Length: 182
Image (cartoon, rainbow, N blue to C red; front, side):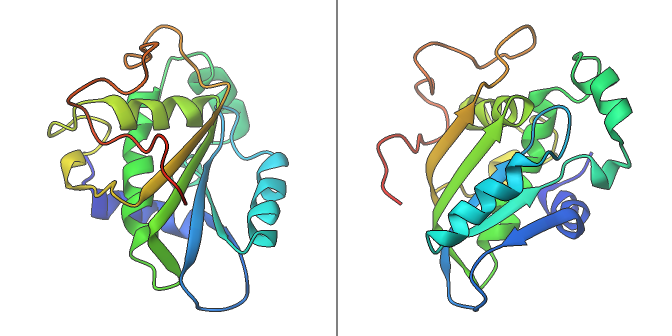
């Protein structure tokens, strides 16, 4: 099982970065695709973030694994492989890696996820970060203090979505970014 550092090393070459052409620290939004992989709407959201003066990072969870659309539609979208709680490690690693960039304001992060990406964020934000959970060996090592907002578009909440309580983030779990300002 990867730790956060190794997971980030695998994800980073598959990022799409959109933002102002400077090295000034800026707020950042991390965009996580649905079960079908990268789709044409993600760059449009990234361009909207850029227009607002933000940096946007489209995180491809399938490229590092060598998975194509046919496989993900068959295996991931059906729930046979790579469930949200497993992909949550990608979310944690991306937060750690992107927060460390000098062109990112590490205390002004937003997460956005569609379907499977939303499920992964939801699991990451509400699960107990015990060792060897959430798809990485060291989930508790991630610093979520810079996450100020979460936006989930139709997150998956069916079977195997373990942290889908109607009340949102459960007491005693990781800090909630609810009502925070970017």
